[in-house]
Amino acid sequence: MSSETAITIPQNFCDINFVDNLKKYVVPELPEVSGPLLDRVIRDKVIHFCNETEFWVFQLQPISVSTSVVDYFMLTELGDDVQVNKITSVELEGTRLEPGRDYILNNKTTIRLTAEPTADVVSALKIRVSLRPARDKNMIDERIFDDYYDAWRYGVISDLCKMKNQTWSSASQAEDYNRLYWDGITRAKADLNNLGVSANAQVNLGNFTLNNRSYDGRTKGGQSSFS
Image (cartoon, rainbow, N blue to C red; front, side):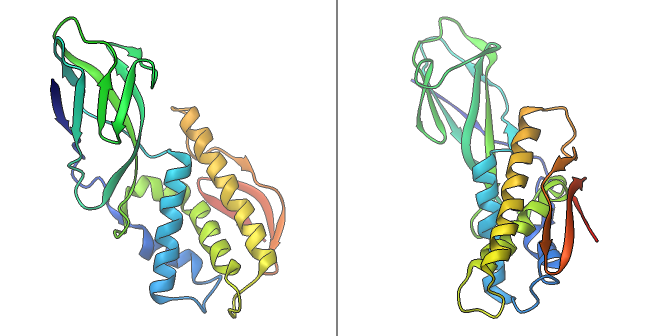
């Protein structure tokens, strides 16, 4: 037997075009790059960031469990802008369930409990998922953009600089920017592990010289300090 629930995303959940807005921070660094190439690299890097960090979390509406029902399906009615990356946590009546032992993920949207519930309980099953932008869409939550656009910018510039035989190719800058990007991933994971702590915490990212500018390694509020 099975039960179903729908993922419901609040109105205006994704309210900023991250591709267009991130270009404002990439193009000054690499003015030679534009058009579909830049759009694709930006989109791929933001999706990679979401997949790697699982920081963009969403609590689904609680599911009522029924006696002897073990399968619970989520209908992913997310709209066109967002996709479920993975299920990150499952709780039943306040107890966190362990994957494999307490439940099995048949796919990204199906949970099978290993033990049949012995009673009908309203809103007993709570599931949290991580999200990512849809592959062909450009929208994201503005608050997320504000917190992590700097890391995305570093990743995009790194990927572009890795390209060979281009006027903007630079193996050394690709390496430096990639290091900053992965420091941003570390920051996002720390923010996730310390829920309730501001995502704008300061992080030491090291010291670099990029495009003849000195980077002092301190960030706050998603802002980088250059001199």
